Image 1: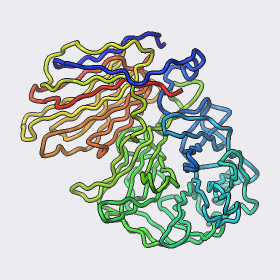
Image 2 (image 1 turned 45 degrees about the vertical axis):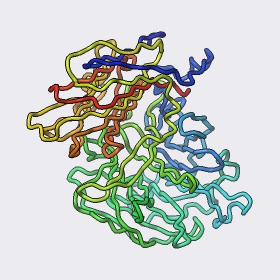
Image 3 (image 1 turned 135 degrees about the horizontal axis):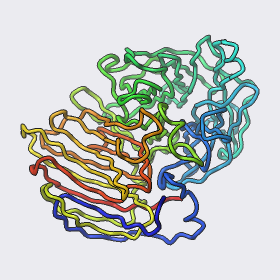
Image 4 (image 1 turned 90 degrees about the vertical axis):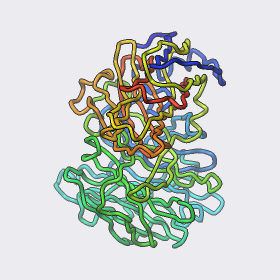
Length: 527
């Protein structure tokens, strides 16, 4: 278990000079310190107060609040009858839990969906002075499912006139009956300004269906999109659909989450980039290879916030930090699951075309308390020199730029080793021969709860002509999020060391690798 006053050590395999600076480290009351202190409890990621959580739902911004609804089972730490849990944040870092928003009813339990602000009151459910917040979700009728009918999933709406604090389900639900498909769920809705209508993307087995509506109540099917499936790909789920700028262009991005067939096994989220004419989406590359949003094992069903103000202009993402291969067996007790850090999505390009990158939102900078600048130098023999902080929680952010000769013919592996006092280890590395980023968590702590959990997980990465690679990582008590080169490659991984990783090592198989820049930040808990 955790020890109060633990020494936080940084062990670097090169001589280091460092400077430290204390940044806004407030005192906490004993009551605050006692909250959210269970073993493995995330300290700066969102997790429910208790019980089971999975997909993020209904993410919408309104009057200074980012709303997060989520799939929630309030009576167990394993998946069961789904409700919509609810929380808000004003800064994307600190969260406030609110009462359950949507409960099961005679039409079924409350599966995934989205929420929007109906600014023009097109639905007639609010007024011009008080536009309704409208949730669009899948009703799942378990009793009908047991009859072997295919009609047990359909789309319904609910609305709130008090900033999401109370909800009224629409009397005419469902607004989209099931057309005869066993999997027909997870509506994501947005306003399409060019066509002055609402657009819905809906997961339907192996495809995405597009619907439109003038009022969020009457819906018309517009088109379908599907692409070549991977050999082990599961049912399509939890889509998202939104435009992003690239220079003078605007491209449309379509997310599809799959429960099986991810890049390192189990769950994963892929994306397509293309064009949308108001009715039909056309991918630039529908069959030319899958693009993965995150190559780690533990980022699934993520979607983006709607109604973020235009003056902000960001497309902000949040994902469920788990994998269906073992989500119900991870070694937490009071609660199950957490969300990723909020991330800003941007378009870039590589040799294959458009690329979606993701980086932590800048609001995460307020987590920083102390920082340590590492002097440049070659990675060579270990030098146990580093800052020591009297801190109960080993929470930190690591930002490193490595440099090597891109024409070096000999195989080189280099990276970061995180280690606990119990000698549990997690490695994040790059290999020049395989041209892969990897995270190895076989010895990272508790791994015995699933044969699918331990392993070395990889992501393809082409080293730049300059020979530089940036590792930007956030380490919580039970997760690591690694962003490579401003999020061109991302890996999110759970890990369960007994009390967190207290030590950081840098390593390299060859002395030709240089640390060009390095900064380590100690982070504070948010609860």
